[in-house]
Image 1: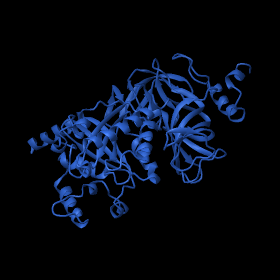
Image 2: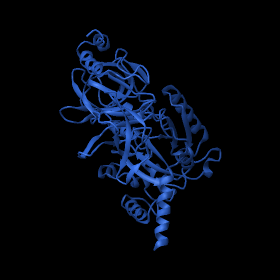
Image 3: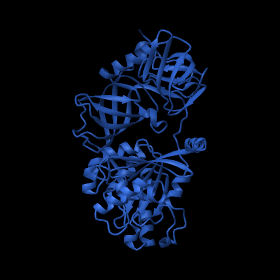
Length: 471
């Protein structure tokens, strides 16, 4: 028994040390996304015996012949998905190989489920985009490629699927690859790898195929195991406060999940937007105090000084590049609401743990997915992608999305239905919104910050900073 326990502990330790890759599989309807993911799970031998037994039984019920397996059943779980043979919701699956751990999101191909696809892409490090070899690059290929790039996914693996249906024709594969390479260059996707695959037959998924001897690169699985993961352009410490913990008069801590960076006991910090400064006294967890903590760790921080810190505030480290503070900014939106975006309507904006009223003050332009060109628009409908100006009722702490996805992404919420109507990526603060640090050592004026929010709402051409200096 002790030996068995040692084996389990050794296995768990090994899993803990493996690097995690989150990726999304997307493509048009019936391109074979679910089958490809099922093939990855099956051929990498990550399924348990009961899963294989259930897969065989489900395949027989679905009309599969002989010992043929319907691998899409491994991820298509909703009854409506099984009936229609399509993906509707985002399905997440975890698996592991000797080199890496993976979380894969199987996302819908239908245009009406673009919101679900955007949800899956928001946390992905890499995207697998499937293209049906019998059809080539489609409108949904363009849409999905644009969205994954918009959401900060900088690496794309293009799986040109159903090669068996075109007799593994090299010329057709290369023509589709050339079409997509042109599309990627137009969108701005810089890291692209191509794979001729058959999810149904298993060609070039986990092992190289004899049917494509002309393909001289690694199969898809080996690419996933070895590709370099880019985690963002900044390692600066960002800690959105989720909860003030005060169990008794002797303890006051601030709980949350570290959005980015590393913090150590004794580090000098600044609380935003107030600008109050202190030092980290303790890093508290359920298992005891830590000397340091990093991105994605849930901790409670205590400070050496009794300063005002509330839910929605952001704790950053002194000496690092500070985030921006503004009430007005420009952002890209993926509109998810059934009702069109309304310029005369107030929404709730949620960035990290901060939620406050906000208005979309202007539509800069709409992206035409078919041509990938910008055009003017007075109305934004479901699944549209656009650049807008937003004004919040108060000051928000953020980084541009391309620098920090954790602190640059937000959602808009309908104030009456409480439904999420848009996913947004902050690109820059508005040109006139100048309340921010002038340097790493400057402390923002809290009066200016709050005054800026009110004045910018009613008098867009005025600057609160100019006014406050004369008060």
